[in-house]
Length: 93
Image 1 (cartoon, helix red, strand yellow):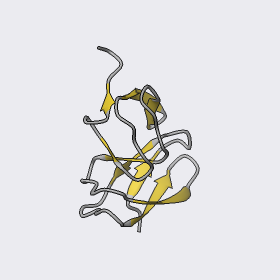
Image 2 (spheres, one colour):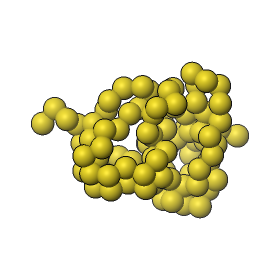
Image 3 (cartoon, one colour):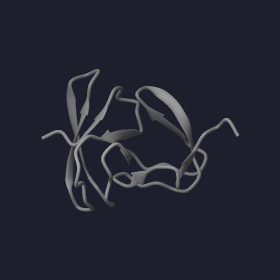
Image 4 (cartoon, one colour):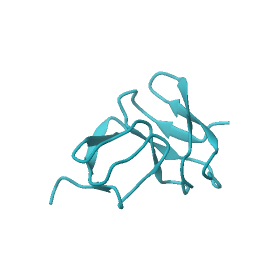
């Protein structure tokens, strides 16, 4: 089963595509551009449509989703954690 998707292998987050992803779930994330599966464990509940971190990220790191810079990390994120507005902000302001 595919739990999350990402487009590019350089993406640092994937998007949850199923409901009910709870902490401890072993996730399969599909890299669409390479038709490859990567595996990780959810450290927190991840709501459908929200992002899960694919790597550890420090404050100031750039976040990539679908091959695009979507913002910067404002609180440390560990692989498998929920990545959202509480730890990622736009670079616009």
